[in-house]
Length: 72
Image (tube, rainbow, N blue to C red):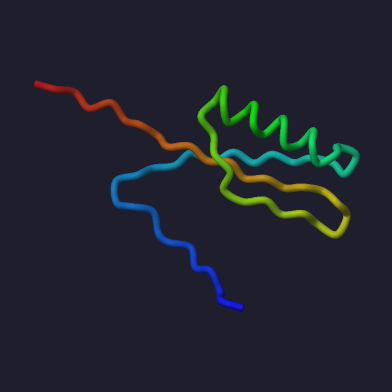
């Protein structure tokens, strides 16, 4: 199976990260709905999801940091 490599972010692009944890009591559909809501309302996108042996979902979300540049 081919190994997927993570590409380095482009120069000049900065990201803000947010970690969210969901307990195993939440069904998959509920977690999906909550993540979609965060994406639509806050501009977040999914970076990584890890599901532990205990069933806890650890989600990392990211969004671009847009810096305002002052014009002369």
